[in-house]
Every structure is written in structure tokens, then in C-alpha cells.
Amino acid sequence: MSNFTQTFKNIDDILFKDAGADGEIDYIEQASWILFLRYLESLEQDKEDQASLEGKNYQYILEEKYRWSNWAKPKSKDEMGSHHLELTGPDLVAFVQTQLFPYLADFKNLHIDNPKTIGYKIGEIFSELNNKVKSGYNLREIIDLVDKLPFGTSKDKHELSHLYETKIKNMGNAGRNGGQYYTPRPLIRAMIEVIDPKMGEKIYDPACGSAGFLCEAYDYMYGRMDKNSQNLKTLQDDTFYGKEKKNLAYIIGTMNMILHGIEAPNITHTNTLGENIRDIQEKDRFNIILANPPFGGKERVEVQQNFDIKTGETAFLFMQHFIKSLKAGGRASIVIKNTFLSNTDNASVALRKHLLETCDLHTVLDMPQGTFLGAGVKTVVLFFTKGEPTTKTWFYQLDAGRSMGKTNPLNDNDLKDFVDLAKTKPETEKSWNLSIADIDQTTFDLSVKNPNKPEETPLREPVLILEEIQALDEETNEILETLNEVI
Image (cartoon, rainbow, N blue to C red; front, side, top):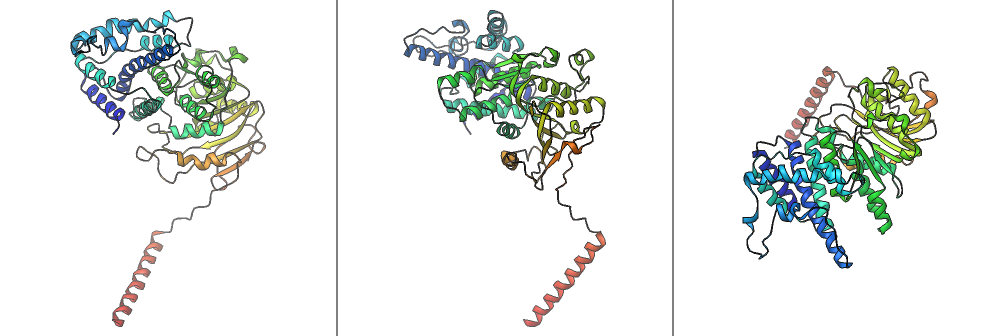
């Protein structure tokens, strides 16, 4: 077990004992702010070292009193034991809650004119968070554990980001609406590989949750680009954009992107559906949209007024936002309930018609039941390009050959066949092409009906099975009798 894995486990054990934390969602929330401040210390030290090599002075973001090396793990100047300098118990909790958090939360006001800076992100995170660790002795133990974590190498940061993703996955599986934070990463990676984002393109997720789409897109592009200063700056500052309504999801998404290598993520804490889509201009549009919008919600009438097609279904409002927010020629890959393809209510029919007339819905991936643990719904993934109407749609029906669940989750290999075939869109036992001219032009029904699926052999009647068993038994007895005669 690695240092990171063991440390995360130990932190969870401590939080389990504390009166203030209640389950996986609280565990990751509390671990997040402590990890963030430890990470910030490492980041500032690296920047100071770099500035020193260049003969420059580095201006620290935090005042000395509020840096990790002063309040969390102070060191004696004589390099003797420093435990006597460390706050613990009620003193530590009092400092965190009455001094540290208010100081950090105020960064939002101090950096209001520079929302893309890490200073502004600090303010946003700590104006939304509360310390829930009641015992200062437990908090001291957690701080001591986090302080020992290595943050120096890219390998360290990669492992930490991987473990953080595991925490998000556990939270997503833990119920209490945890699924809103987690889309299976193999599915995200397959969506990104089919979309194939390029340097210079702007990528957007207006319901970003834990920022899984943005983090995976970053890893995909970083691994394929030329590592020069211009590309690195473009990736850091002008490529990934997100919006998130929920407080905790916003914090976790921001933290997740920071751990993946984006210092000041372009994630806005806002309700995307509160924006009128008629106000979206060309400067507000993106080359690529990757998203798994919340579905099943019921939006208020005043929110519905922001959209041309009125509906209370959250995901259908997001679909209108996606289409409006794409540039001409822009590409999207969207997870949505499979009922989107066949619902007969006026809003569903109008939205399908709008999608087919304004975009090329070239691919539909039909996902098996159980892909989203705990969600209990079947989903499809829509791939479309804005600008030309749809004439033909390629469907692929994923069959992993097993029931999906916690012990058998989706993996990358399950989606390899889809990713490979999506390039040429052939007819197979799992895939087929549908001409839009052949569908009902009043309902625009796109139901998943695989015409190429082999007919299943019908189950035999029990009486026939029993007769076959009896015949086999008689044959076996005859063979045994023959053998006995030979012997």
C-alpha cells in the first residue's frame, strides 16, 4: 500500500471517530481543504525556488502567519523539536475557525477583479467550506499525516490525483445523491477519445460536478501535445471551462483540477440554468462540450422562461444550453436518459426535432443498465456536431457480457470496440445505421431498436429438457454396461 493510500485510509479512520464528520461526502470535503493548503505550500515553495534561480523575488500569496509551515507544522529556528509550537486541541480548532478560514475566505473580495487567479479560487473555496472536525486532537493527527505526504515530483502529484479520484468514486457510490459527483471514468475517456479535442479548442462542461470530464480531457491533451511553454500556458489558462451550482461539487471539482495540474481552474460557481440562453453570444461559445447533466430534476417556472422549449426536466433544459453554447462546427458528447430518444410529450418531441434540425447527431451509444451505480436508470451518450442537420445516425449497443454493478464496474476494455468502430460506423451485431428520413416525422422517435441483433434461441419446454436428460442417462448406462462386459 502506497503512502498516499495508507494516509487516506488513516484520515478516514480519524474522521470516522470525530463527531463532526458523517460519511464519505464529509470525509472528502474535510480532507480536501487540508490537502489544498498543504498543496499550496508546496506550490509556493516551488515558485520561490524557481524565482530564486532566475534571480527574482517571489511574492507569496498568503501572509506568513497563515502559511502551512507556520500554523500547521511550524519549525523551530534552532532546528530543535518544534512540537511545543504546534497548536492542538481547542486552540487549533479556534485558530482554524476564527482566523484561518475568515482570512482565506476574504481572498474572494481581494481578488474580485481577477477571477482566473489562484487567489480568487482560494477565496471561493473557503467562503463555501466549514471545518467540521470537532476535535482539535483529531485535526492535529490529520495535519501530521498530510504533512508527511510527498508533493515534489510529477509522479507524486499523479498518484495524489488518482487517489483523490478514488475518493470521489467512493463518494459517488455512497448514496445520498453521491452519483451527481461521479461519471464512470472509462465512459468519460471513451467520449473524449471519440471527440478527440485539439490544442487551441475550448472545452466546456456547464454541469461539471467533480470536473471528471475536464480533468480527463486535460490528461488526454497533455499526453499528446508538444510540451512547449505556449501550449502549456494555453492548456492552463484558455482551454477548460466549467460551471457548477452545488457548493461541495464546486469545491471538489476545483480541487480535482488543481491536483491534476490546473493551478487556477476556470470553474464558475453558478446555476447555469439561471442564465437566459437568448443572451449567449458568439464570444460565449465553445468548440467542445462534454457533460453528464443532472436529470430527473424539476425546474421552477421562472427558470423555464430562460429557454425556448419549456419543460421542468433539468436535462432537457441543459440540452438547449449545450446546443446554444456550441460554436458552428462545434462538437458535443452528452450523457442523457435513454427516454430522451422516445418520450412523446411535446417538450421531448420539440427538443429532438430541434437537435436533428440544427445538429448532426451522428452517433448514439446505448449504455447497459447499471453503468451508473445507484442511479437505477438507463442512459445513452449523444455525439453531435452543430451546423448541419442530421441525415443518418449510427447506433452502438454496448454489451459487456456481464451485469454491471459495484463488483463489476465499467472498464476501458468494455468500450474499446465502440471507440474503434466509431471511426467508420459499420453495421455489426451491436451497431446499425438509421436514416432520419425513415423515422416518424411527427414524433422523431429515435428509440434504440437493434435490427442486427441475432435472434435468441427460444427456451425449450421443461418437458423436452427432462426427456433429453432421461435419454442421456440411458445412453450413459449402456456405455457403462458395455465397459463392464469388456472388463
